[in-house]
Image (tube, rainbow, N blue to C red; front, side, top):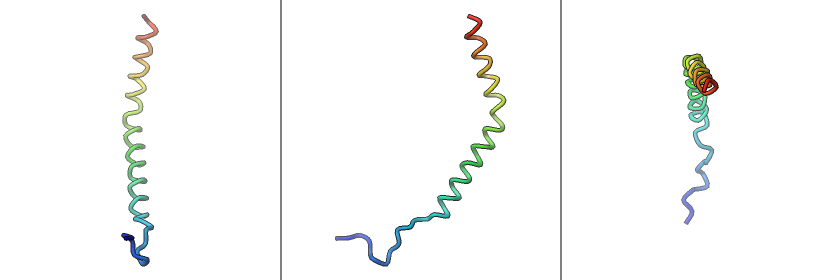
Length: 53
């Protein structure tokens, strides 16, 4: 037995997925902008400690 009737569209909720994708990308950019310098400092300190051994 087929679950889908011929009139039922299987396009999905495209605008919803676009909105979720754009919001996620926006959050990543904002978090990266705020945390980027601090993460860069942590990385530099870690590399300096490894190289000074």
